[in-house]
Length: 279
Image (cartoon, rainbow, N blue to C red; front, top):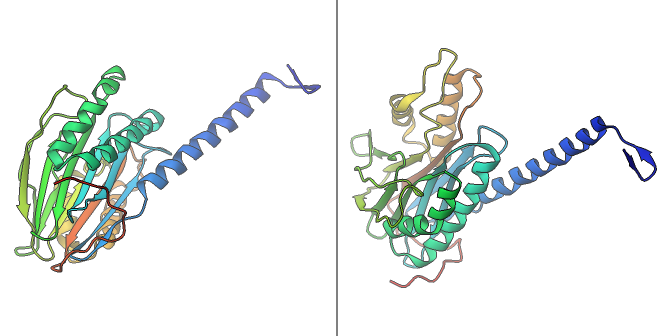
């Protein structure tokens, strides 16, 4: 094989192709990292934080925050079936669907309905699906309203009795599962210092050398011990607990968490350009 008068072997061509592919994967990783680690909204009345650690260079977990003009903040966390580049591509589609739905819907249930309508045909074609949990936090009333599309129920850390339990059960089929779905909603009133921990199953399914899983009981124990810390510190403590448990066993699934912690102050979301929302 010749190129500009120089001879290239098949091995040389393969090396060039591998280097090109690696550059493109790194570029995809950087794009995904910037989308997942965008500006986090700051507001009086509480704090939110999110982090994601893919099992491969790029992953299919997703979280996002979207401040609304009515003073609420919309939170979403999701897990795309699969891993690597295909899951990452679907994650980008999911992000676009969420951003579009957040501008035109008035509640978490409506948001999931809109996302399912937007993504259903593509997900069915690709034989894939996405689990999602969407919640609206209203700092004025202290109410968290939420809807679920086949995702893990977040954990609620009650500062009054210092217990960790799941949020009230609300069920709905995964996005891409069936067309024309309506997603029921539930709500809970949050008090000062209460925390809500959203997560993907990569946390509870992390395994150690003996093949044992981290499991939700261990997660609850970790959150119970560190519940008085700020959201960023709680994230670090959970990650440290997982790493201590797995003892270097390679990560099999993406690990993602989002925390909302309440501070009893009046809210004033100012860090985002909020979309127009008719209410």
